[in-house]
Length: 264
Image 1 (cartoon, rainbow, N blue to C red):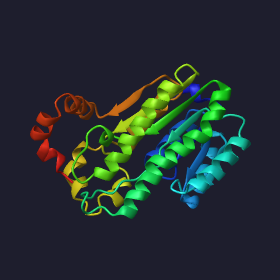
Image 2 (image 1 turned 90 degrees about the horizontal axis):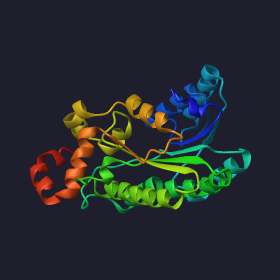
Image 3 (image 1 turned 135 degrees about the vertical axis):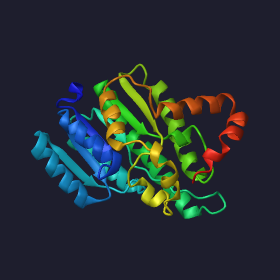
Image 4 (image 1 turned 90 degrees about the vertical axis):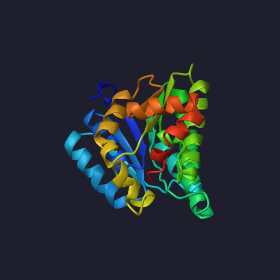
């Protein structure tokens, strides 16, 4: 699937389910040794055992809540000390809750920013010195089309993904001449358990189900891009095209596509 990953070390946050689990499986199938992090230790344990048995790779796992920055520092310090190198960091952990700005609670706002933004930045800062010392590495940040096209009822979530894109673009320029690749992944809605929390009514999923991306397809594109100088992965194509039109003609686009934006 990606021969460049043979015997490389791939670190994935949010790896116990959904897109993170799919990325882990495909990276292991490519011969990569895995470091998996997530809150659900039981799932990580089962996944690690399965991948080691199936693909003859090493698979180390750590229980970690990415909203706890002290824990992020502690666990990542251990990883950086225990591993001679880290070749790929996939910042996948994240969640969203779809509510209007009026309805959104301050506590859930804080939690989304802690996981989606602060945890991602903290993980990157912990791994970056090792990659700089190696003079190579790849940081992949899972952002969202929501970071490019804001829609009603996703104000807080979209704000976190705008932040991720801003951080990613800045970091890419800072390390461009240091052998480190930085990629932003901007998918539209993916058919995973993300929506169990984001869309508790099920209304949004029902409205957009025919357009939802399959996690295997997204994971495959991400794994194939590993250790290549890929700036962005944007899925699906038509949604990225909409994003371009949105940036060029925002007022017109909001007027024309307003009904689609209100699918939540």
